[in-house]
Structures are given as structure tokens and as C-alpha cells.
Image (cartoon, rainbow, N blue to C red; front, side, top):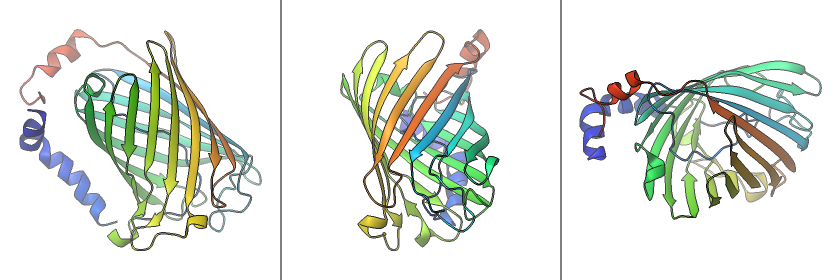
Length: 279
């Protein structure tokens, strides 16, 4: 039912975003503001969620990824992410501003991002879930090699209670042609201890452009140990990542704090019942 409704009523929006990205990709392994595997769970319609991403690299690569780039060693970066629940299957996101504190540059403003996230409604209630995220960034010259970059992030996963298996086969683009798309899949294996705790292993990668993957030593591979805690005031995710190749920072720390800024009201409940809402 969801697939049929989504295809019939909402294909135009989905294809417009997807086709815009088909013409573009690849990026060197520069800094990143978001270290997260998407699980297709989104804010309810009418709800605004705030997540604060923070990353620190106590032991990282000491050379810039490209001339003039921020050096990751001993750098700190973060971004507030605002998520707006629009439909049970659609969430609009805004990252603003991406910022850093790094040696040689001090405090900098790095990027602004928009994202469009389409998912199977109420993904947490299903054994099999899926979605796709489209992200559009405007970057400073020391953050990325090009001002405009984008991401296509498919989401597939299984809730096997108490285990979760999630894969995000990400494609990054800098709008220089399909053959240059960078393949950067991320994976998460999680064990849940309801109602508050989750322990997970995450693997983040960067294989290089589709037309020719980098050699293994030049690829990005990081293995993370992660813990999540769901609290009354804040949801917390913290982790430590270890680089597995010379092209990866040796040690990185992450902390994500999130909470809803408002509660779901009657208006948003009625909104789900209007014609055109996905089943």
C-alpha cells in the first residue's frame, strides 16, 4: 500500500530531486560534520526536532585533504540540525551553520545544508524498513573542493529485536559527472536494551569515485563503538571511532544531543488524514 501510494501520488517530488543529482559527484575525504547511520525514523508531522552534532579528532591526519583545507588533527566541528516533520513519510532538514575550530584557522563557518528525507512511515514499527535522503550543501572553500556538493543516501534495514542491521549505501557528488560519484557506504549493527539503551558498532567507509576506486591504503575506513541513551529531556548518542587505513583519522569522538522542540498537536493529527497523505 505504501509503495503504491508513494509511486502514484508523490513520484514527481522524489524524481525531481533524484534527477537533479544524476548530473553530478566526488569529493576528497575532507572533514565531516555528521557521523551517523540513518535508520529511517523521522519527526512526526508538525514536530520540530533539534539535534546538535559535535565531533572532535584528538589524533588525526596532519595534512590537508586538499590545498587550503581544514586540518582534521585536533579539530572540533559541529552543527545544529533542525528536522521538520511534514508527512509520515517525509521530513525536511536544515543544518545551519556547520562550524569548526582548528589549528591554523581558529573558528570558521564552513557550510549550510538542506536535506529531503523520504521513508517508510513509522519505520520503527516494521521488521524491514527503507528510505532515501537527498542532501544539498553550500560550502566554504576550505571545507570542500567545490562550493556545491550533494549526497544521495539510500536506507535499508532490519529490526530483528533486539538486534538492528542498517546499511546506508551513500553516494556523494560534487556535480562533476556521474562517473565521479564517490561511494561511501555506512553500516550499523546495534543491540537494544529497551527502553533507554542501545549499544552499536558502526563502520564508515569511502571507496573513492565509481569509475575507479582508490587503493585500500587510500580508502577511508573507520570502525566505531557507539552508545545511545533515550532520556526524558535529551536523547544522547556518543561514540569513539578508530581509523583502519592511513587515509583515515586515527581517533575521532562524536557526541549527538537531540530533543523535540514542540509536541505533536491536534492540527498535525488531522493533517495526516487529509487527502494525499501516504497510507
